[in-house]
Length: 191
Image 1 (cartoon, rainbow, N blue to C red):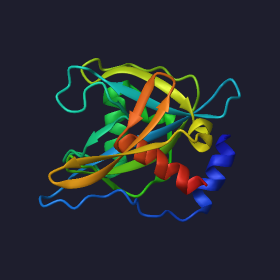
Image 2: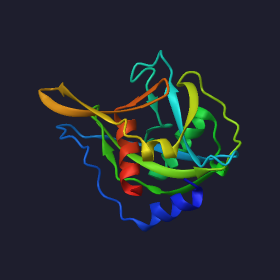
Image 3: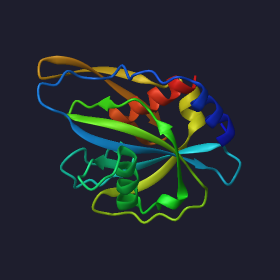
């Protein structure tokens, strides 16, 4: 999918609230992630930028995720949070990012209210990985998520409640949980 096709489909359609929310007894912590769609310089269409979290992290070690994190008091907006966290984690500057919108917030089982910020990134960017947070940066063609039938849902139990865990494999990467749901929500919006 090209940038122009994406923008036309993304902006013409009304967003629908994510069906993947949990009932929490305690207040949720606000966070934001950046769904960065990188323009391919090889004519391959938009690529979804993903990270693999460092293996030594206490929360979600080695999981595939979008750059992002919790809202800080100094952040001016949820978009500011996503851009700040992206720069801190992978060194992608704000000047290289064009925000095009947001997906509906998603509540994680771990107690976060996460807003996915959708953006276009020009090709050929230089990244600087913060090894304390990120082990790897990689890209997946957006077309893979739009056309794959390889989307799995597993039932898990936590706190006496049943939860659906989404799983989208790509090559040797295991994209699951909140990241997979956000990708599923993006694809549902575009389709």
